[in-house]
Length: 157
Image (cartoon, rainbow, N blue to C red):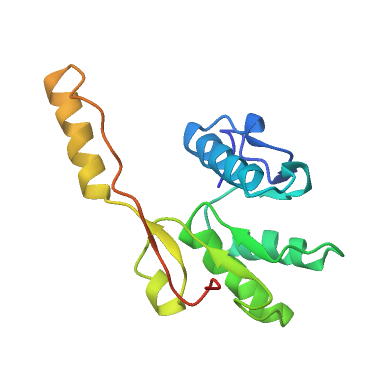
């Protein structure tokens, strides 16, 4: 996903480069999980797309997959970007999930037919919470996001 309002496509070293809070927080979570698993975050390539589109995801993934140190997993910030990564893998002859695991975010209608493992969230619940905040003019307590991983064929195990 874009890292800032300027929307440059780039490679970045970490969450600090992302000025959009959602993107920054997701990158921080990925970094924390990577470090907790014993991997060095400095060795994780992060591709930033200027738009949330399958075409941009495909281009970014194709570039990553051409590298000598190509990743064996891509955690995309949206299903659109992940669907593009799946297309790049198919065009490059990289088997999913054995050669490349791919995850998305949103659990869109296109995720299930593509076999995409993704994170589902309730946009309805998030919208209702925002409406309560806007209508009451005061904080309505802590909103616990109802996220869940939906496992499909694009990941191992």
